Length: 145
Image (cartoon, rainbow, N blue to C red; front, side, top):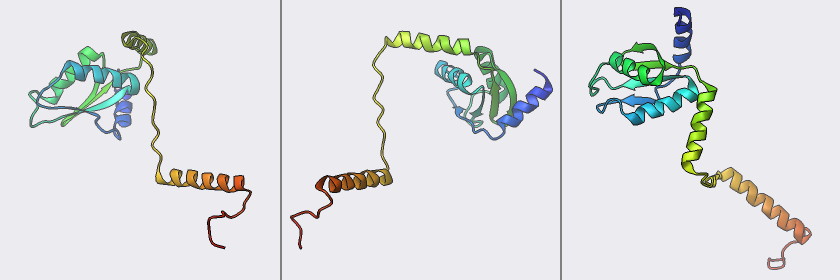
């Protein structure tokens, strides 16, 4: 990777927030798997190393992460590591197929949509108008008048 490409990636990484943290436990297999998935989805990400509790330096962690992930270390500043890996669509599709096989085609979970107060009040208004139209616009018999 050329220095200009690395500089462009550093500029893209500047506004990003670290989405993973490395602490006293160091690097685990689970962390590597999650970073692998995140790199497939984002290509560029930041990892924070807690300097007080981590057993190694951020540079050592960066090199230890880059090798199994097949990623490049863009920069290490303080306790923040920036990693980059070009997304490979074929590899991503293979992972998805493998996960589907492992799951054994389980039924998809029903997604529940949580309604806000405004939406509930709009639906209540619409139901009231529908009921009024059904009655023919006449006032109800149970009231005064």
